[in-house]
Amino acid sequence: MTAENPKIINWENVFSQTSIFQTQKPTKWAFLEEFFARDFYEKLYETYPKKDDSWYFESSNDKSTYRKWFGGKKTNDVTTDLKDPNFSKSWNEFYHYLFSDEFLSNIRKFSGVPVNRVKDFTFMLLTRGGYQLPHIHNVGPSTLILMVYFTKNWKKGDPGGTYVTPEEDESKMVFEPYNLDNSVLIFHDGPKAGHGVRYVTKDVERRAVQIYLEKYSPDEGWSADPIKRELREI
Image (tube, rainbow, N blue to C red; front, side, top):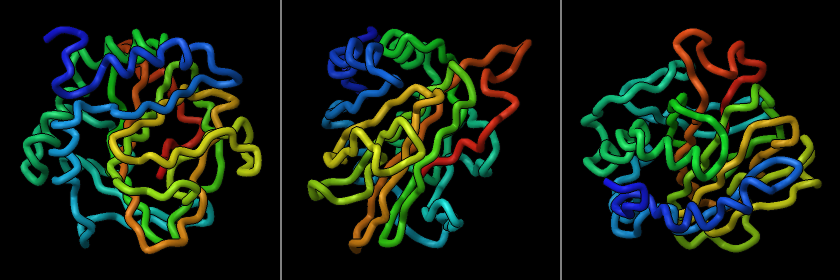
């Protein structure tokens, strides 16, 4: 499989945003549309896990969201490459692909950030009342966060997509996505990598997956350890 093979990820679209991502200030970020090859995306979209009692509901002063994990993973466990029969063939294929040399090397090429391992993979579901206050992790120089969206017909101007802000202040946000159909927000963790989700007021489901990629070495462990702030998104 070549680096630009579009079977799963539309790498041509990803690489077209390389310069934008790497020169963005005060923190590196990019919003990419048509992230997956469309045929593959439709399979993921059709088999995105339905909301039921198996989802974990989390509500606190700073967030309200539903979460679901692959392979029976618990909240703070590190993600590992495995097969989970509770999810579709397409979801297992995508999950496994995240651990491949092709995916990780292409992400390094795109971002210029030396990530080499998947640290977290979580299904994220927002419904009416869902939100996350603006926050900044700043856990280290080698962490990428991907918010991948699987929601069609999102209305322009409606809250639900993860916005970008250089401060822990919603009023300072510089971008909020509204095309949540086969798109991804990628940002480089750092002191100006603020983000959050505005309060959802409509009876909708915003379906997404959160992926953390990070540098890891057997001798030193994860580049973000010890964790300065809990890596939890919605």
